[in-house]
Amino acid sequence: MRAAGLSALAALLSLHSLSASADTTCHTHDPLTEWSVADLSKIQDALSGPVADLCNKGLQPGENEVITHEIGDVTFEIVRPETVQNAEECKSAFAAIVSQCIAVQNVGGGEVESGTGNGVLYEIFHANADHDDSEDDHLEARDPSLFEDDIDDFMDMIGHGNLDARAPKGSKSKPKAKPKPKPKPKPKPKPKPKPKPKPKPKPKPKPKPKPKSKSVKPTKASTMVKPSATKSGKPTKASSSVKPGPTKSCKQVYALAKKGTSNKLAGRENFVGGMTHINEKRSPKSAKGCNIDIKALDYPDKSSISSTAKFYGFQQPLVCSNVIFGSRSNPAPGTTKAFYNIEHVLEWQIVTKFFEWVQDEKKPGAVFDNPDPKGTAKKLDFCDYWKATWVGDASFSIDNSAKRKALDHLKYAYPGNNNHEKEFIWLEESINAPAKSHMWADKATDGVYGSRKMKQAINSKDINKARVALVRIKWLLGARKYMKLSPIRTILKDQKVRIGDILDKLDTEMAKHPQAPTFAAWKHVGLKAYWDEYMNDKLKTADSRSKHDMDTYLSLINIKWVKGGGPVTPALTSFRKEIKTVKDEWTKNKAKPWTAPW
View 1 (cartoon, rainbow, N blue to C red):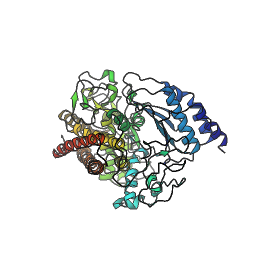
View 2: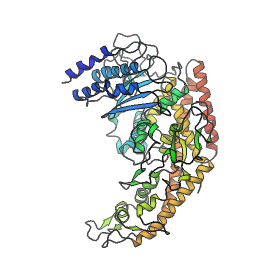
View 3: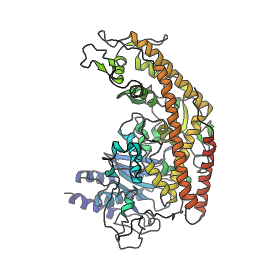
């Protein structure tokens, strides 16, 4: 069994001792059956190797606040919003999480907040666990990871007994995840309405009442727990009682709001590493269309971006009450270029997903003749027909261009290296993704963010978690402000028109270029008109999704923290002002319709 591995790991805490004020919070909502002695030994070895190196890592110029190291499916993460971590505390924190959470409780990880009050957070999480902070930003290909928001909203609806039209599809398979009971030692039976925490019960606190398990929040490990005021408020209470202090700085809140998106954003552009490196080297942007990878041109790296390219974002992004949005010639105060993404306005996935939309909305069913006379199927659906006639080696010129394959002609209508480079600008990274990217993404949810996680943050008793939710709401407001700016509208229009024009030309030209001598060629279907309709539909969806989230979450946060909120403290008063500022700005933004620029 696991005895040998467990005894070895149990010895870890004799090597490292945490600061008296630091507590270990295990992700008990993430039970894992996958842990094996081999896994544990590998992690144990890493603690004195690459993880120790991570702990010793200083802050490089322009580096992101979130740094990580992966060992197989396990990620070690440090969030350091205002200062570099203490190396010894860091090693002790990771050792405590491994010993208390992984080895003893067999769960997907845990976290420790620095005992020095500097806002540094240490966390371990497993790829197969439901990592609480992940917003899932692999957007380009509509791969399984993008379904997280769909499942998140579905789970939220199950919790409220409101399945509406989506009930028949998934009501059987998904409820499993809903209860996540985690029936460890049940503290004294209590009436169902969200039991109160019992900070003073016997040495086995683990305040894990049943209703709490639903709210995907970590609870304390049973070993080495030092009861403290900051942790006693973890279980959720049904009343308006909240924990208004102590509060974190806005920079710390910003880093926590960003936490969990950094690794995945790297994957979004096929890069490994934190957001720091995402602008260093640009490989081709790839997205799926009709289940094939379609690559755009290479991105320019940040050194080759025009010196006149503007930086878009909040004028003071690390001031929570600041909602003034616009462009500037240099990064905002307190930030560097690493705080921004190189952005091209129109998402490449919107272009590639167009062909699937044609099949689903305009040409459903197997209605096309197979261009291959020897093909087994006589009739093909639109996607298979499009691939059979467009994907191949046939090269040709359009309007005196160089000879290119069909999909290469398409990508040259989109910005890339030495191609429409003036359309590249800098956009604040968290506004770019998840806010802007999820507005336009190909997913089923009504909103931009996963509703379950947003509601948990807003309804938490911890004011800092609610402030994280407000920062994410502000990012979404920023994405809408960005899309409404005149220079951005002009770029979006130009890109939309160019893509439409090349689709129109290919729709005609491909009739002359079969992919093989014996194949029939493509037949004109009217792609330009479809593209225009599709883009109108995409803009309408982006508008309605963002409105949905802004209205929903501002209303919830107002009910919980303005109308409710518990005893008035300076921290709560300040938070209420921030809520009012964002709410007032949203009212003004919403009053001006977001119209198509074409």
